[in-house]
Amino acid sequence: MSEKGNAIVLLGPPGSGKSSLSDKTDMSSKIAVLESGNLLRQEIERGSKLGRKIEAYMEKGKLVSSGLVIDVIGRAMRDIGEMTIVFDGFPRQKDQIIPFFAMITENKYRLSAVIILQIAKDIAIKRIMGRRICPNCGAVYNVYFDPPSKSGLCDRCGGRLIKRKDDTIETINNRWRIYEKQTNPIIDYFEENYPNTIHKISANKDIDQVADMVSSVVRDAM
Ligand code: AMP
Image (cartoon, rainbow, N blue to C red; front, side, top):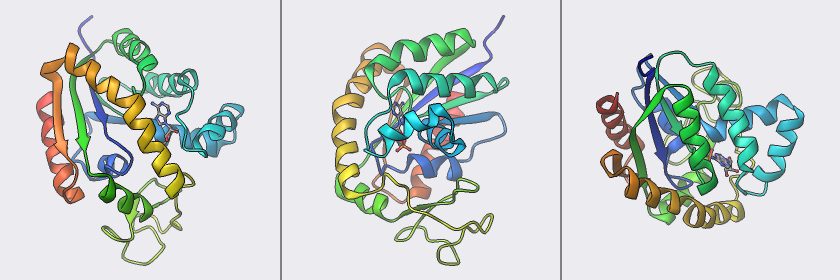
């Protein structure tokens, strides 16, 4: 059988705007975004046994154990038809590389791009502290850079906006340290083994500009 589609990996430190991008990026109906952080949060919301295990890691700003992440992503991937998949935030540590390739190969996908967002830490911290999300529809806002039209309410569905539990200064610093320690080796791995797929994008700019650049790489990689 021929390939079902292309797999694109999107990586970036906390605050680089990854979770806003799926909203802003011009993702056609031929693209599915699998956002690991969001899928894990949905599992917590469901209140399942798996969700409770995940929560114990996430509320401390720790990476969730890879077995649990792979479970959740593998399940979400099975529900997707023939589309390009953007993996947002996965793989994020070294022991997820082999399962990632196993997953895409099994499902007949081919790695076509690795997008790496780069941002200065002080800008990232301001973005994270201002972030508000809609628990109803997943829309993301920022009280400094991208506020909703009515304070505290989602423009899209009217839901009451909340701060993510892990958006505190302690967990942000922790998540940065973890990104540098765990995710930088993944970037090195892709650079070494798949150099033609690498696209580094500066995320210091306005989120709409970043989204345009990401959209253009995604379109070219489809
Ligand atoms: P994010 O929404 O991408 O900032 O992710 C939020 C949190 O979800 C992270 O701090 C981790 O606790 C967890 N997480 C997301 N993706 C992964 C992954 N691939 N491996 C382990 N933990 C993850």
